[in-house]
Image 1 (spheres, helix red, strand yellow):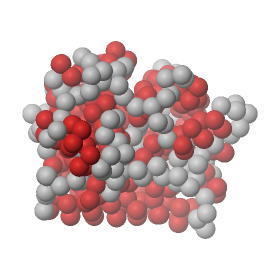
Image 2 (cartoon, rainbow, N blue to C red):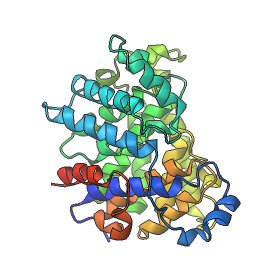
Image 3 (cartoon, rainbow, N blue to C red):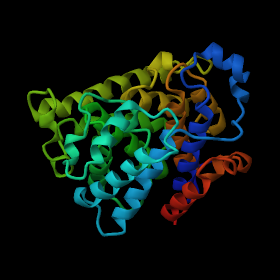
Amino acid sequence: MVSTGSAATGSLIGLALGDALGFPTEFNDVPSILAKCGPWRRMPLPDPAFVTDDTQMTLALGRGLRTALGRGPLTAQALVGPVREEYVTWWRSPDNNRAPGGTCLRACQLLSDRDRPWAEAAQMGSKGCGANMRVAPIGLVPGLSPQQRSGAAQLQSALTHGHPTALAAADLTACAVRALADGTPPAELPALLRTYAHGHRTVYREDWLGDLWRRSQEPSVADFTARGWDECLGVLDRLEAALATPDREADPCLATGAGWIAEEALATGLLCFLLFPDEPLTALRRAACTSGDSDSVACLTGAFAGARLGAGAWPEEWAARIEYRDELLALGEAWDA
């Protein structure tokens, strides 16, 4: 089963479903989740199916990206203004009450000062998963060059999370979403991402990031860039080891990390997807029944599964109940068209 032209819709709905499924289980250990939800393979979608800041910020990025693309070719100058505005609107929203991450809150408060250069808002010490939980739209929008996709993925991260590993993990996440939407077989994905990481290890996207690296503690731009990609390559090692001897009943966080930080969220979301590449609901449930950042891990798992399998991956009874359904569908269907 592969996507038939609905990768963007499938990915965005999957992302939100994973978010909603993991919302009640975040901050719980696996025994507590099982006691609360029953056997993980039969975990029900909450009713109502509320989402967290993960989906809210994905929509903020999607709206900003749509605005930028409506003005012409995608560049850093075209993207930063609309996305900055959408992030700040999210920060000010009364609906921003779903345990949002501290890094995003601090950065968006700084971004709300229109006279402040965006790079001064970036939290350089943070590589939290907020950098890549929301990046799927960059991988889904059609017509971008690989250079545009890479630069945009890193820039949308840098507005809040300036750590080099946050930038690299966001780039890899967008790459994975695009590859799956383009039909890359799941079994080939880890090697593709490893090749991509090695190829970008010495590439600093000055055209998108300016001199952001100078705000870090790294002695040179080369050290800054290599640190991010090397940490991502390290967690890809753990992913491949977990897939070599898969244990589908074990907590995935034990293999690839709890997902609170960007590279671990990427790897654990990928692990849950790759353990069940043809069983999207099972993959979501596995991701939601984890001891770490369950909503973000499941959010990424859903984005990967939906990008590969399309909108048909998700039962209508689930998709019809997801919060923000109309806006998710509007973005997805526009990009699928």
